[in-house]
Figure 1 (tube, rainbow, N blue to C red):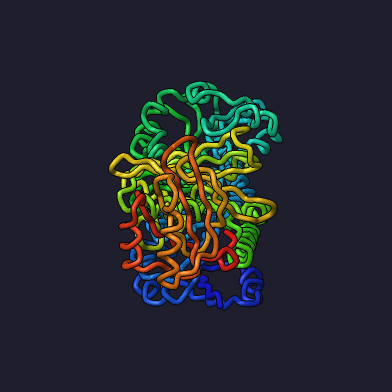
Figure 2 (spheres, rainbow, N blue to C red; figure 1 turned 45 degrees about the vertical axis):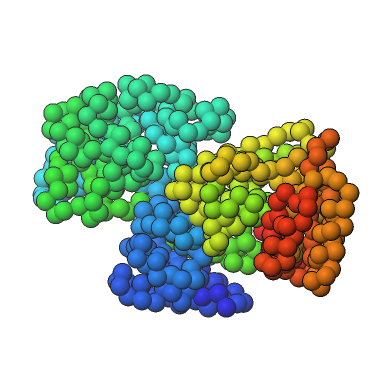
Amino acid sequence: MTRILVADTLSSGAVEVLAATPGFSVDVRTGLSAEALAAIVGDYDAILVRRPTRIDAPVIAAAERLRMIGRAGIATDNVDVEAATRRGVVVMNTPFGNATTVAEHAIGLVFALARSLPRAAASMARGEWAQASLEGRQLAGKTLGIIGLGTVGRLVARRGQGLDMTVIGFDPWVDAVDVQRQIDIDVVSFAELFARADFISLHVPHTDRTHHFIGEAAFVAMKRDACLINCARGGLIDELALEKALDAGEIGGAALDVFEEMPPPADHPLRRHPRVIATPHLSAQTPEALEAVSRQLVAQTRDFFLDGVVAHAVNSPRLTLEQIKRLAPHLDLAARIATIAGQFVGPDLKSVRLVAAGDFDPDDLEPLEAHMLGALLEASRGEPVPPVAARVIARDQGIHIETVARDGETDFSNLIRVEVRGADGARRCIEGAVFGRRELRVVGVDGHRLDLVPEGHILAIRNHNRPGVIGAVGTTLGRHGINVARMALGLRGADDEALALWCTDTGVGDDVLTELRGLEGIADIRRIELPLVDAAPGG
């Protein structure tokens, strides 16, 4: 039974859909303190939150069976993503559900700034008629600058175009040609946007790179009557610099739906500044948005636990159902040959290189790497490493990682190669391919060409290529009652060294291994243990 905790308010209809799913048990417990959440979280496979619940490191540490954290909304700043990743917990958000509502709020704030609507309403409530002092600005013909051209930014752009505004944008992380094709706006530099825009709307995440990126220099570069709108995240704007710019008349005004500290202190100067319109993080606060993000999160949760689909994860490769069906044997193969490589190199792993050659899509590389790294680290460390946590753990250990694609490099329709290097500088290379639909094969070890099903008990024996060595190994195994199910022999050109992979029905004990090592002509022996192919998960 998959147990799911709904820790914040989601739409009742979406929760009912989740609870009606066979095999799911759903508990709705909102308003829990951090201590109360930590006390019960160990019973659940998934936690679904919106706000204000925080999933911090102590909560994640107590979540022994947790596999997924779902955030209804775009931001995941109430989830310790790093701690979740280290525990192998997938963190998903819902980037599209409330995008329309957020975009509408941003445009609403543009109108409010242009026509001083809050001041006008307040003056009327005081019994005044301040028509002469509240002259506004027409939006048609003005320039709207959008920083961040993701889903919300593009929706704001289209609404600005509908108002006959000139819309320009800045986003160094998007394809400018693609943006211009989709929404027909000019993608300009940071400096040009500040120089041209009458209204500037922010739609980027808060990261180390974007923290306070709107500061003194930006305000100096803006038009003196420009207005700034932030419906994205707090921390993007240096609030002290904004206050100074407003007081000095360097910009015309600002509309803020988010603050660096939320809620901001009651005496925060921007709460009551005459040139600021402040709203209490209302951008996604509509019933339509709640319903949309709730249903999107429920759909992602069902897909994750029922089909293994990873959608909109912020710390794990995205896997569609089509990818899972197509890649399942390749993910399994990547994990198996990485396990072999890890058992060869041991705990002193220094670098790993994954090469995917043949009929792979660019989007396939990240999940292949995750499964390869997880199995490699587990084999070398001797403890489980979930794919979602593998890159973080490898980084912490100082392991260099490289993943590349190669076209036309192999005689196989697909080939996965794992190259590892240990502390002693020795390099090992394991290659595998999928024959047909899901016939897994090891096809190369350190340049030795061979053909072996990667499963069960395997002895990798390097020996001098001379008569009698293979017979002596077989005789020794037979004398100890160990049956050889199959064997793959690989030669490497004119080398004197041969490699044989012996698959046995039972494991080989230390005493037998010691005896084998003493045989004449044996250079090296390694034990390799792999699950049976039929019993292995499909990725």
